[in-house]
Length: 312
Length: 309
Image (cartoon, rainbow over all chains, first blue to last red; front, side):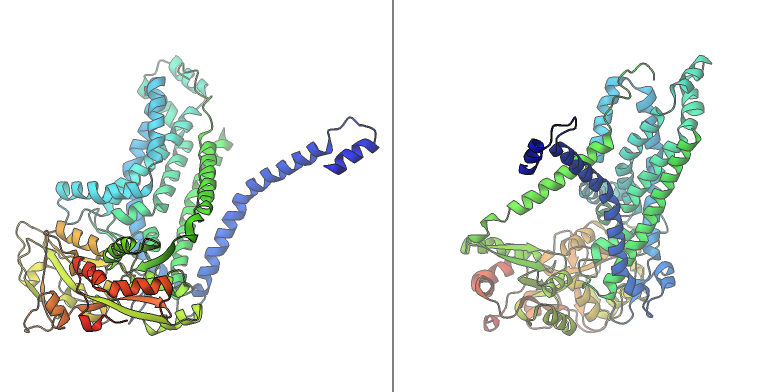
């Protein structure tokens, strides 16, 4: 401050901004740059940390990657024979996610079509607010609904012995993914150029023809991205599936079997595993597996969106 | 596009969401920093561990608040293993546990904290085997339980035990177990399965209460949990140590005279001899007032001669 004013007095004023403003702007630029880059730094740091914790067991002689990926026997705390097989957990994750998507995609895409084509502006704004509210419900609340309300309904209507199972988890995850699919899908439909719609209307198409022959094909990349983001949400969800799927290590033979997912397993066991033990490292390796799966899904979503942009 | 001038002027929602999240996170951090104020007046005892004991630990904490208002006892569950792991890291004052600390855990605690864990037995518990109240089964032997729950065990249907459950078409046994951090899980494995592993595919519940709730709502279920968690919807089985021997019911007398095969002690662990507020708290738990609360929670209090530290 003092230096600025003294230099300002010594040198005749030039048509530049005061140094304070220049430095201030640079400072703010730097801050914004740092916030932008921090995302990359964080992701790399997380990746590094998970790998560092998981690496010792990955390269140890007693550990077999084949067993880890393809065995269904998960006995991390056995006294006689410790086995770390995650196939049943992966199968649980897959079963719940697939069921959730089967339920969520028709509702999500249908909701997006309705919002963008079939409802008036006032209803649309109201619905949007409510759908976004639905997305804001904490996952533990969903889990609680699954555990108490849904499980009773499932026992009553399907005759399943236990109400916490794949069906329960799938329904809860579908309810959680629908808002994402609706709001991103609606954006995708809105991004279809007006000229397409106008051309179709000029040819005298009905609304259904407009939706099925023009809008959905034109917005398919965006809709697919919306679905994949919903998938990402479903795979990564922990608390709700921990409470709603019954927590049983087995490959499900039907939607009324209980399962355990990769995420729920980490959540349930990491607290007890002594830091640095083999069990702890294997749980981090499960985290790496999960990271790889979600990254693949996100990458696929990203590539599809890019494809959509490049083609335009 | 269809005559809605508002479309396109909508604010960019994801950015808002990120900004809001960041703001909330910042506020949470501030709140967490600001919350440390009143520590100078009150002492806080961190108490973590056994899900079997979490109800009684909570009841102790509440009653002790009346006896000693200057001491806050913070209780959390998670399982005996979680409490012991926290004790090894030195993040809790008291770990509650329904199993004994293993020698390697004691060694780890010594290495991490430089102090030897001190074990204080505060009561006893009978691990009860529960079935639905409509199940006609009354007694079961240890071997039968191992066949139901153990890896490689052959019993999968109730018919194999000669039991027909009224109103049920599929009589597959629904096994209800505990998550592997639970002391109850390890106790059952060590004392019923003979250290064999559990059969996979059991429903692993995160708390003693959840086991009883699920068994109470499932006619074909069988599960194990502390006897303090019994509800009208479930039935406790009598257990014979070996096939052919007289089955014993889980009760206070049978626990104290050790005739019930699944009785176990409940303990607290502290790092080194308890000091200051923790010492007073432990002494209070072992007093008549503390033991009274233990008994009310459905556990078996210590006989008078054992109530010394």
